[in-house]
Length: 610
Image (cartoon, rainbow, N blue to C red):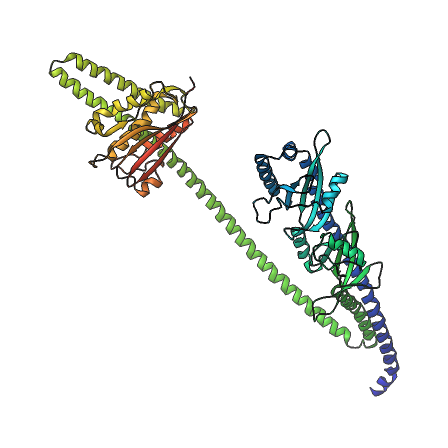
């Protein structure tokens, strides 16, 4: 065996030298290739991200640039500038305030030709622009000279940066009236950029940072600005007291056609290497810069490439070792393959069993769902039948409620007629019988209305004499509440006052309300009822029925207009429901106010045109 090892030692040494060389070269080549590919992918991703961010910025700019153009053509704005009046300025302030919510602008304001703001969307705020003079601003002088101007600046009042878009306002004769300005702030856009995890900023033609995902970089510069130009910018107050220092960014050597920069991070942290992408912003002279950290990406790609190389080289080298050292490996590999096959078969069997069990459970669930569906259909049929019975009971209760009062009155007049006949007063008894005939006609009208409800549709509206309807209701209630009528007072109702509705149905409403009021004061000695007009206009009127009874309980008041809700023993709880539906049907409404001092029902009705 020792001789065999000595004979194979040069072969093993040569194999080891080749293996080390292949590993070193393969790892280096694969790592560099993977790193360059990762940088290319990162550049494509950053470019896509930058183009999307540029598109969003252009969308904001394009949407905002149309607003000054439209406002400059507004006739009300021109009239206010031409002859500012308090009412006109107030209306303009409110109009500008309303525009803010729908346009995305930060502030909209209007200036006279001397640069003084006379109206602004923030006129209610303590830092309102109204009264401030902006004649020193470039966006004002540019608009006055060229008709339109744009300037990114720090607000002199709000101290918030933004883009000012201005437009000169002229009348039809071409006379200059003033300037309208729309300020656009980019806070939402900057927050969106911050969430991307990549430093994004926009610079103007001088390289000054305007919009940025890093607020601490705002108003820094890409390159050093000459002192005289720096002083001129500061005197213009465009960026307030910003020192205009140079950004902590250093250019690095380009690689693979890609630009790289280093940025200074927080104290105690090393500089960060970033892939840099820059895009022009059309129509503005601005330039967008996106910096994406690349060190981690390159490092991860480097290791992935090396691992991939190892995944390829190790089997090749192992194959070489196997060719050199193949004795015994065939049996071992065969055993490993058999073990793997056995494990695979075990996994297949286990998975087949699980799938079979899952299929059985699914079939059981399907059968259960079908049975549930059949039970649900049966329940639905039961509910339909129950609903039909409930509707039938409600209609029957409504008929009983509506004809109850006329029937009671008929009984009273019939008893009176009998008494008059016994006394030999046939003429008076005849009058009572005529009244009974009228009341039977009324019952027929009520049942006719209920039939009309079954046929769908509603009774046509007609002018109704309000005083006659009130008198009719009192007539029907007199027989039952004769002893309480002395506590009922009625305000003067014009005899020619007509409302839209239907005579009998309006009587129904009044009977329900008056009957409830009379019943409410039956047990109260000093209580009273008033019926009066509380409001009378050309279009409608309010008729109030008030009592000084004990008021309604809370549980009844909260459910007052729900069928079968009542505070009276033996009551049906349908009167107010029917009354409200009648009033609503003819364009009115029925409302209630109640307390321990009494209850007031107010009927609002439409006046009939005469």
